[in-house]
Amino acid sequence: MAYNVLPLTRLIEHFERLPGIGRKSAQRLAYYVLNMPREKAEDFAHCILDAREKIIHCNVCQNLTDSEKCPICSDDARDKTTICVVETPQDVLAFERTREYNGVYHVLHGLISPMNGIGPDQLYVKELLARIGQGGVLEVIMATNPTVEGEATAMYLSRLFKPLGVKVTRLAYGIPVGGNLEYADEVTLYRALEGRSEI
Amino acid sequence: MAYNVLPLTRLIEHFERLPGIGRKSAQRLAYYVLNMPREKAEDFAHCILDAREKIIHCNVCQNLTDSEKCPICSDDARDKTTICVVETPQDVLAFERTREYNGVYHVLHGLISPMNGIGPDQLYVKELLARIGQGGVLEVIMATNPTVEGEATAMYLSRLFKPLGVKVTRLAYGIPVGGNLEYADEVTLYRALEGRSEI
Figure 1 (cartoon, rainbow over the protein chains, first blue to last red):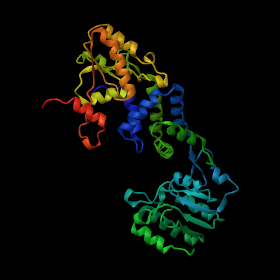
Figure 2: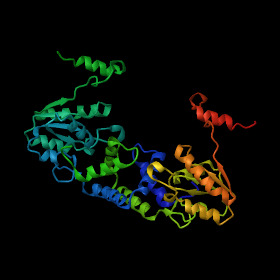
Figure 3: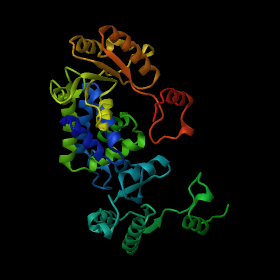
Figure 4: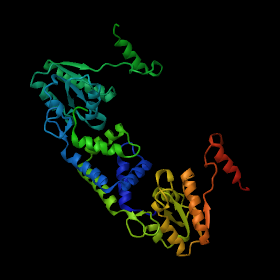
């Protein structure tokens, strides 16, 4: 653009950097913020600073929290003998939405990916080993994504934990509920067949 | 969610209020901001405050700007005898992208809409009248959207300006370039037929 209004251009650029936001959406969002009541815009800005400032990793499960120990780890009603290992904090939310899991979590904050130079040392594996080492853990559920990197990470960790005498399990593969057999890929269908159960 | 992390929840809510951002996108954006380097997140927050603080309306054309008179109105190379009247600052950007228009603009910041209680007094009509009243304006192009409200506003303003001795024009209607006749609605097609020109 020949006629730049710097504060506006910079705001648009910031929105554009966010995931899934293109040039047009970034413009729309920036103009929306400009038309907000002043207090709302200020509150938005402060929320960003506040979240960035106050949110830390739980010192047990590494999930995002604003206290030393996250609400899930602090909850006495949760079953501390079962740890569900996930890649991101968003995955924890996904499991919590099922309302069926009553164990605790461990957030790795990434997956092992030699291609991107990410090894176990860059993840929170040491902390997970320490938790298992303290005893009292009966089962570790590998709940990483069913991708190449998710599988590799689950494999690597299960070999690491088995000698410690804990049961290591993996999420079931199969056809998604509400899905359509016609559109299921052959690997998924094969896994669904393999994992069939009696009714 | 049973386990709320307040600063995170508030940030998600802020993102969710933006146009076109649903619950899932808001979560993704909030987590993205949390994973940003601290300086980037701070810069983002300051940009919001800065834009909200510094961006004002140009005292000539009412477009958004950070100086008293916007870069377009300040540009001596622009033809001040032609004013293109638009609804929003985004419309100005759209015209600038054509690189074909060399006149100036006037941003109404809305359209006349009796249903929503918006009359000419809530728009920047008075300012436009004053510009025309100062003399030197030969043509006013009505470039509001081809919607009911856009048409009504164009109609209303053209009746207001004609007695002042300026030429008032309206954008051409027709089939969009690259469009498909099959999908054109009948009104558009009729207008395209009506406005046909010799080749």
